[in-house]
Length: 463
Image (cartoon, rainbow, N blue to C red; front, side, top):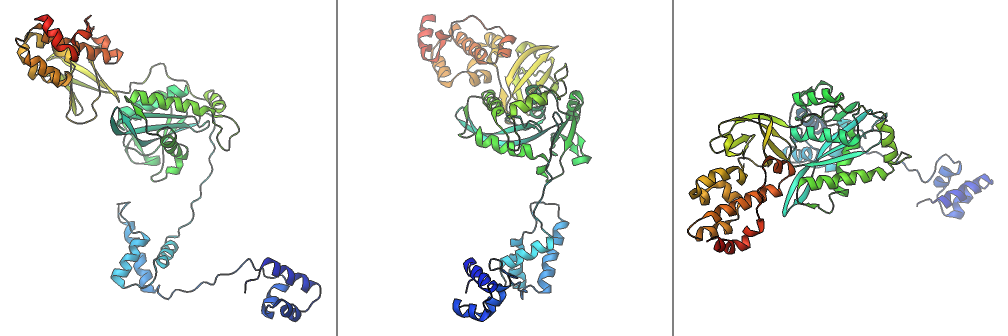
């Protein structure tokens, strides 16, 4: 019989009033042992001891096998290929004919491992003391293509002001660019930057024993902060930014953003991070904007020279008027064939210089063994060799196939073919970033005259 709180109350009150245990038991229909147990108030009905049964299936042989599995894991370097309690149970069934339950093995594994609930020390940061950074991933639509991009996340530890930036690749150039842009957005430099042991920052070692990559070492020296690295598999050491990665995915990338390019996405991300300043963080009494204003007073000033985040290289222009950077190829104007040029590889663009003068800019190719041609780079050569027009790779990459086919059918091939090519070369420059248009002056041509839909009409007029 289950004794309720009301039963317990009645037993206690009647006993304290002087009524005998025998009479209480008789009138309430409860055994005298139960009344005796509760009448003196030395036991309560809402607390029951669960007797622990000694397992009869966990023999010394079974326990030895479990310990041998766990001991074996200590000598294996593959973190994700170690025994789980489920795997140990399966092996016991297969190899030892174990007849007990899986939960029995799970309890024993926890006992042997000494598994305890994780506990963390609450941290408190001073204004301007530290910034935590991390990387994550998200899916977006770039044009009509669904792609996976990398999100760089940074957060000041005192004000919790975030910065989230998107990149196609998680490489050294993107890493340096993101840190510098974060400092620019915050308006200063914190005393420490806390990161994990990623290879883009750490050459070898980990945690307190990490040796920095030369580029990251130079970046930290220039901005005057101390790079700090977490211990392996201890993500809670940068818990503020760990949560930011998920926040960015859920709050900015839902629904999935549809953008024309990464620059448009980064504008969206930055606007959302600035709106976050109106948030009041739990455990803090002020808005993020108020805390940020206070923290900015303690940030170190930005240096006068902005750190060059590009990966730089030198190359000789080939006879095809191209240079190779990393795993891809980019065109330059044909007049630079055979000369040595300097290349700056930024996260999303490639800039090519000759004796300090910018001569070509390309959107950075994200694949391998690809080529980017600017049609304008080859126009002087095509004007001298018009018979190569229909087989030229720069032409095929920049002029729609249907336009080329229509031009091919119009004979004899005359100046109107070159005029159409100039149209596409100039339009490519017009649609490019301003820095590209500054490299080559766009010819004052009426682009509408050579639109794809009016090729026939334009050709007839020329003939």
